[in-house]
Length: 286
Image (tube, rainbow, N blue to C red; front, side, top):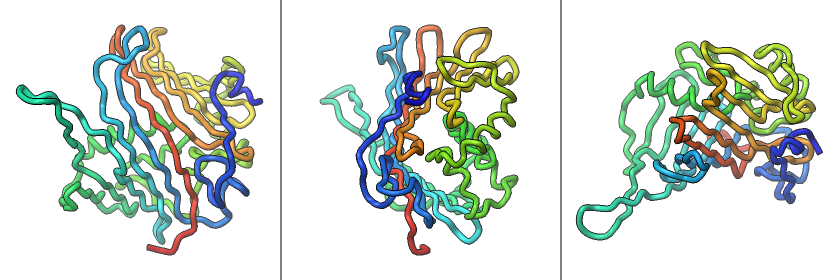
């Protein structure tokens, strides 16, 4: 039993499946020796809760995307594809309640070579447009805040981002944390946050200060995997993020993220991301 379990951060061991890692225990080593394609399904659920912890107010449709990274001669292609979406229900002034499909974009493709992101709409069109850099940055900042284990270099703009070779696969460790990288993860924590400030519920506690905010990071002392990130201002918790993993032959596979953001004294916005069908495969070039 690891300290993560002792601190009630679930590590669930599940049954074996096929020859590739699919978000549960694989039949052989955590990641195949040769692979050029990573994919995972990500289900996003957003809603608000009241002071009593019960759902109240805003509720977004639940959506599921397939996230893929494909090795290319110049680096990595990234593809987001909408594979399922809950339809929103609306009540017209007259007549019964009806459902609408409000999501028009079903696919985003970034070749990773500095060219614009390609957008595919539900009707199959590919409008030629460049997303405003402010929109892109806000979105990437949110992804980075929910994934503190990912290197920040993945989230810089294409104008400043160095070319990332397909042989550079350190980003995978944020999804599947293998025991062989325990020392590298600890070194990264020390470089980013300095020494540990003690422990909390058996977890190593790191801190940093960004303006008026104090950032608390909790990591498993055995694996140096980050399991929680909390943001405080004047002693009040503004954000609380928990990262949940599944144990698979000694590796930790990202299973989900739950983040709460304080909107007001009475309301918190909740974002839940569930990872499934995490797969590494060797595919023909496409």
